Image 1: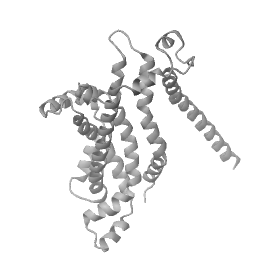
Image 2: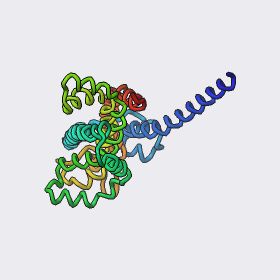
Image 3: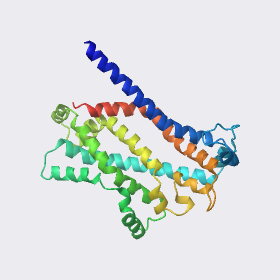
Image 4: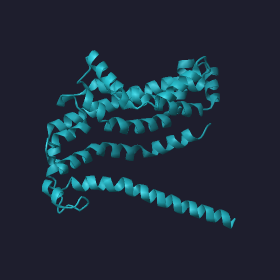
Length: 280
């Protein structure tokens, strides 16, 4: 008994050390970004990188907030995020349902293709995607970013949601079948509502990636009216110099919506992870 208590105590100590280390790794860069946003341009150059600002210089945030381009980028990011998540969650659910509930010829092969697709580096497809955007006349539009985001997030979303749906008791479907529900009604009225924790987890996980996506947005869009929020940073740097304080202020405003979303939906994220970890 004493030996087991020592093991538990050592385990807790190691967990606290690892958690503290990870907190520092994540928190220090975030604080650097926030504090630098309150500095003047010359103060960043003359002072230390992690030094506290001499005063809270709000002109950086005022300049960004009153910039019309910033709100155009913000609008584009919101449109791309919402439509991408809508299509992604629908397609993921449509694909995961038959893979998790039905037995049919070729099921294992299709599932293996989904898993294999997760190992493809997305940036390898940069040139083919660029050429496809040109041929379909979607280049330099925000609409080209939506299918790109959905396509690259789909494999891991289907993989996670398939495992989640496999944990839903089949007796619930059988009871719905006895009550006269067809296959489509069983999906929309039984499986989909019960998959809400898993869908919420996928929405948060993929939402952060879609919101922060830079490479494809930079490659597939050109005009200011079609660019997303991560590209707003280019407005505050030139060929030979950059306004670091302004860039950090812009970054702070860019990540703020995701922090708010995570703070609101963190309970759903935890529930989704716990529900997906336990098979029914």
